[in-house]
Amino acid sequence: MNILVFLETSEGKIKKTSLEAMAYAHGMNGVTTAIVLGKADAGDLQTLGKYGAAKVLHAADTKLDEPIIQVYSSVLAHAMQDEKADVLLLANSSLGTPVAAKVAIKLGASFASNVTELPDTSSGFTVKRSIYTGKAFAFVELTGAKKVITLKKNAAELKETGGNAPVVNYTVPLNEADFNTKILKTEKATGDILLPEAEIVVSGGRGMKGPEHWGILEDLAKALHAATGCSKPVSDMGWRPHHEHVGQTGVKVAPQLYIAVGISGAIQHLAGVNSSKCIVVINKDADAPFFKAADYGIVGDAFEVVPKLTQAILASK
Ligand SMILES: Cc1cc2nc3c(=O)[nH]c(=O)nc-3n(C[C@H](O)[C@H](O)[C@H](O)COP(=O)(O)OP(=O)(O)OC[C@H]3O[C@@H](n4cnc5c(N)ncnc54)[C@H](O)[C@@H]3O)c2cc1C
Image 1 (tube, rainbow, N blue to C red):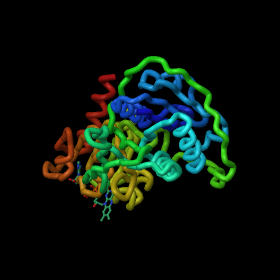
Image 2 (cartoon, rainbow, N blue to C red):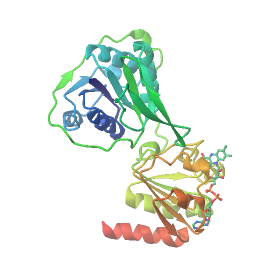
Image 3 (cartoon, rainbow, N blue to C red):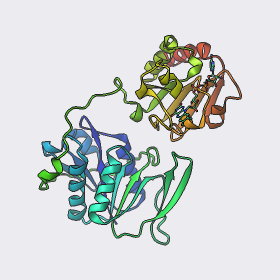
Image 4 (cartoon, rainbow, N blue to C red):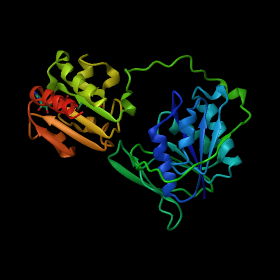
């Protein structure tokens, strides 16, 4: 089976979610070709062999520096045909998912998004998808000769499995008609660490009592190199900016570590955090529903616990 993996970049650096797609491809035991579009860090391209790529295609045309969905889907559909690929794998993301859907339409391929496990190929090709914001799963059979799959964040463990892979310059004719959408500028909503991509998130709820108390959460976030998030009422009341609001109606996060401070754990909040690897809850109410979803819990007053936690983290460094 020939597998093509599209790797997303941010300022030229390959995103971790895309490396997870490489790990997933490795589990499928096929021949994996990685493809990167636009500006990319040469060192990052070289490392893709370690993640199981047999070959790395780099389409370095500067017109591909901006991630335009129509353009990217045309290039990837082309590459699928050039590489005689059976499967295209992408990270499930605001770029990967629409690009995947468009590639599937162009190729008449089967399509499944938000896939969580390796396919069952014992009879056919069945994948497990996360649906209803992680509250249920759907098992979907992909019967098309070509298949396009987006992978849910944290669904595959990163593994260095291979060796070196040649990086090949890949050129495709670009269709001017695809450039009918232009990205004029991109503004980061947050500081250094983008909330949806953060490896660690420190999030606060109404239990923080007011915006003037956020300093202790920011100190903890700084000590952990984490992004800050919050519950919906907190952003509704203007204590924190709306782009920090996590949950069903806000940002969906999937960090390695989610620390929830003074958040009760309503189902709408959990819908945005249930893909996190490890959840730590700090709440003074031992019966707060969030503890049921937690890997670790501290029953205590946030104003006592959080500064001590920050001190301990700083001391351990
Ligand atoms: C359609 C719809 C969509 C929604 N979408 C979202 C969403 O996307 N995200 C979201 O977050 N909510 C969402 N909500 C709201 C959600 O139902 C809850 O009301 C909300 O998550 C509660 O926020 P909270 O946990 O910060 O506040 P509360 O429910 O008031 O909980 C505060 C918690 O802080 C604890 N606490 C108090 N003092 C301290 C202290 N000193 N130390 C430690 N702990 C303390 C309390 O024990 C309590 O558990 C939605 C609701 C609806 C109806």
